[in-house]
Length: 90
Image (cartoon, rainbow, N blue to C red; front, top):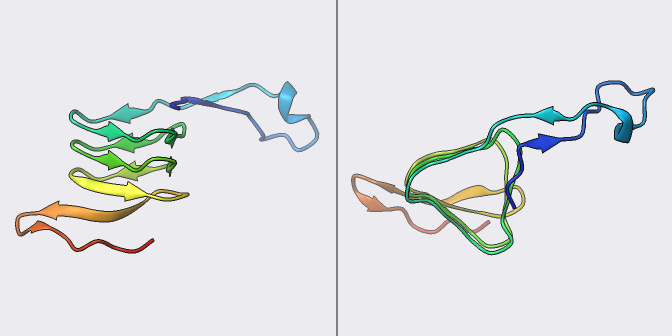
């Protein structure tokens, strides 16, 4: 699921459903892959050649050439000049 819109919640005296939505663009780099059931939240920026593990929730920025997993998604492997890093247990 990709979404670029979220509920507004700046006014604590107004029900959230009555506040104007907040829009923030999502960008996904070329060659990236999103696993089944992954959720990408408003304002997220996913780099190039990234793998988002199934069921992960992405928020914020994801660097190029890495694998992210979890809720919230965190880098578990990345590719550098030396090759792939060892897996990180989340």
